[in-house]
Length: 449
Image (tube, rainbow, N blue to C red; front, side, top):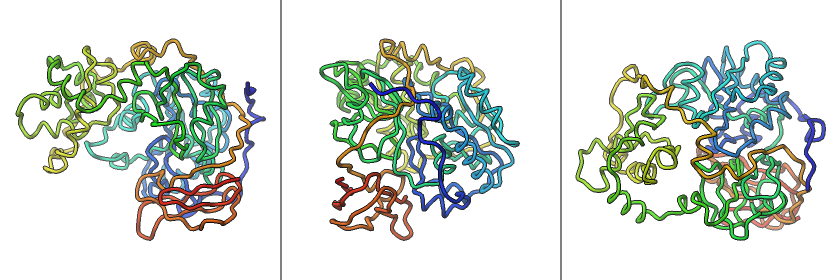
């Protein structure tokens, strides 16, 4: 079993020149590490008055951001200061769950002038940037809009830490949780398989397992254990294969459609708990369910377009275990095809008067999801993980795949450039995560030590 790490044991702060320009951030291959993977340098070319660090981490069983703040507060705050300078922000805010008293106390002692802490309730989905911006500033991002529309930039904790560390992104921090011997948060080379990470965390405690990547609510099921870790992998959740969450995330569309058409009684619970509906956005999952069995007005598609896919409607609100989220996702292309977007004024958007009282407490969500039996801890732990081979995808970010700048047979060292965006295309640079010899494929670069 790997030993728990102290602050001094794990990855001391290091780095070269300060990452003070968007070009430097682009050079380092830094993207949104919370799951979106949007190239951070693009955000840094926008001027806003407020930068919010998203440390809400509201998915059950995940602890990565909290652990990074505990062990790497200095580079995190340095990165936040640099971002504030680049975008011209007067204020920086760290949005973190109020239950983490020790981390809040430390950050308050270390935070420089202009950066404050915003304690958040322990609810889901506090980490959705629309919800986070509203809780921190009181402003509502308009439907289909971005934080910059309300003079705000939002960045993930690990993203800001990477800027403060000022080195190429070659490794990823993530939480391994659920049915594993030793739930933990670890730092692993990008491109290592999820199976290797699970084994390094003591292995699975169930004979037959399913794996969810990300958090359990917005997860993507892993097709096998050879899936590589990328810059946006925030969690590896191992569950027994018969667990309800594994079955629900793998349910085929034909099952979702047939059961939804026959069983939905239009109770509206999915809509009344929808975080975006409670913000005042034109999203009504119960109307999406109507579309399964009836010819309804075309504007129903508008009611699905602004779904944030948090899955609260399907995994928590619906008393019949139906899947409004996936129905909304299926209807989104129709809405875009018809140009059915929100036509109102942003000023007309008003949050629901009951919004504050319909937030879902984490303990109740964990109970509802059947996760209470699993150890809900994830200490940052040093792993002796030295893979002989890594497979690094050329697309692990928003935008177009990057193009390899190395060729098969080349030798590389950790931090060497492997791929870069093609001219004029949105993308991110990709760097070697281990020393070795390169084999270039169609959609990935393999390095063998």
